[in-house]
Image (cartoon, rainbow, N blue to C red; front, side):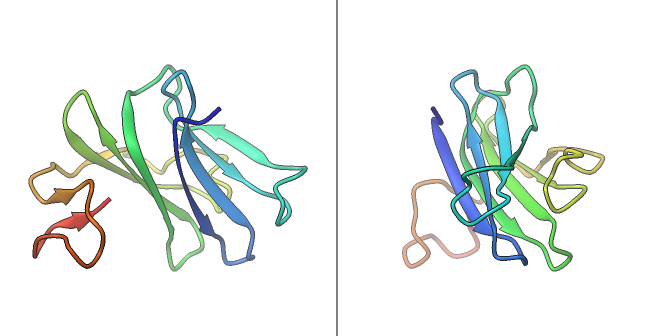
Length: 120
């Protein structure tokens, strides 16, 4: 059971889902079909747990997922780009760039966030 999740469609039209499992591991699932019924590739991006929340995913121009989440320990926004379209090779190096949180809006929608703040 996932604690928090986010979804984006890859350039192939298939879902890419990021989520925190019950052990605080951030995982990514790349579905092999539209229903995610079979052949789904699942990869742990933070093995051993990295307590966080508010995962977000977008697909870059190259078709590789870009994943962000809020690190509850350091209070930072963490961002990483996957090394392939399924993220099965994990994030590119260096992983989980710290972005700071002074301009991160965690509970805002696009119409009400303060000017200059990132939406997560």
